[in-house]
Amino acid sequence: DFLMAIVGEELGFVGVAVIIVLFATIVRRCFSIGQQAETLERSFSGLVAKGVGCWIGVQCFINMGVNLGLLPTKGLTLPLMSYGGSAILANCIALAIVLRIDYENRVLMRGGGV
Image (cartoon, rainbow, N blue to C red; front, side, top):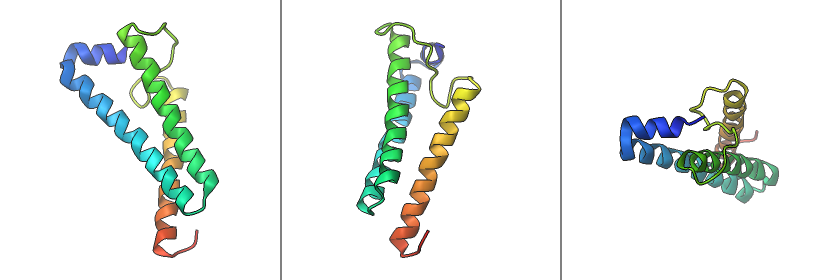
């Protein structure tokens, strides 16, 4: 889909820049949650959070590259924006897992057990 092209047409540079910054924030936060989990000696949780960040980041990069005409059409949806049924469901489940990892990190930092 070419949702990013439509956003660029309707909202211009500011709309596209806002979307890119929001996706970059999500990816950065996934990586910081993963690093925090690894610091707390929860290696698997850290790798899962970083993997979700890579997954969303690469999917955004490919979709935006296709919209700019830099990459061939692949059929990847733009995470959390494109209507895709199973794609949006998988992205929401992945982000829910990252939120759970963040919750468990916070509980462990307070001294509680999970």
